[in-house]
Amino acid sequence: MRRLLLTACIMMLTLGATAQGSLAKGLNADSKGLNDLAVGYYREAVDTNVQARLHLGLLLQRMEHFAEASKWLSQADSSAMAMSHLAECLCEQRDWDSAKKAAEKAIELSAPADSSLRASAMASLALVYCIDESYTNASSWAHKAQEQDPKSARALNVTGIIQFNKGNDNEAIQTFRKAIQSDPQNVDAYFNLGTMYCYRNSYDMAINTLKKGLKVERNSIKLIYCLGWAYLLKGEKENAIECLEAVIKYDSTYVNAYNRLGDIYFSTGEYQQALAQYRKASRINPKQNESFRLTGRTYAEMGEFGKAIRSYQRAVEINKKDAETYCRIAELYAKQKQPKREQSNYKRAAKLGHKGAQKWCTQHSIAY
Picture 1 (tube, rainbow, N blue to C red):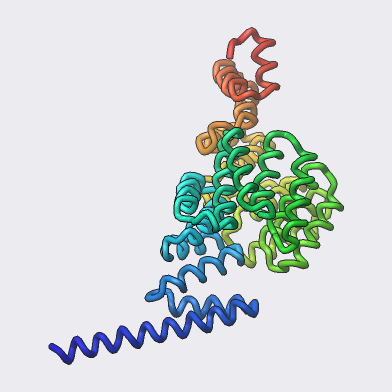
Picture 2: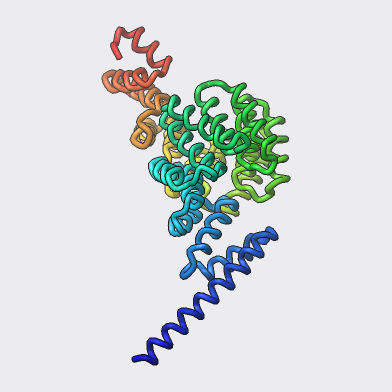
């Protein structure tokens, strides 16, 4: 019995020493930017070493593998650092409830001196409130984040997103520029600024901004995706397809890339190919309403109104605040001569603040 216990102890010590050695090798490779090598070493140590889980999660986050990063960060040491970065990853995955809990935990665990971590967690909390359209709370937490760390690029990025969602586009652009000035290595700042230029139809400025970001991180999936979107909006479809296919090659679960490829096929009237891309996106993430909304648009263009309505209804089941889609459903019911259902959907859109739906209800003397 003693011999068995001694053998078990020796095995445990050996495993611990092996894990520690792999962790050290991983940290060394990580410091040199050898990401794939570092990931391999960290994986060798994760079974017995919580620090390896933390560092693996942090590295996967930088590589934009947010789902797997979340897995390892949630199994790490439950420190303020792990919780703060977990909140960031969950925000990227749009898992808002879990992100809120992780951010609150990070704030609770972090010491007042941990200004960078506290600012990041507060910014994540602000972003959650922004998505929920609780702009007072969102602005309050974003302000607290900037007080904690005035140079926090994440706090500035989230502030810019809040400004954009409130319709203050010029302020958002200025804030994203400040984020780049504060941290020229911050990929999110280039992504957000590039996205803003796309919304403003300034496609050349978007492309230039995103290319600058790719000089910082040439393998950033989100920057390559956004560059593809900018090319698509500019009408350079071959460049757009090249970027989007590169994204899918690197990450076959990147839903938005499939949606944008679908948009390219839709624009050329290749509706079956468009539907195939949208279906891939909805299979990967059945909780994302955009894929179903785009599927509905495609069926409507094909004249298959029943299928279009069903797809649109799936979209509003996922996002009950999608006023525009309620209007699309109403339009299709009008074409099918179903006035009660047409009216019902316009009323829903009007209650959500859709001005076109409100005008329709007023013209038809319908209270909403």
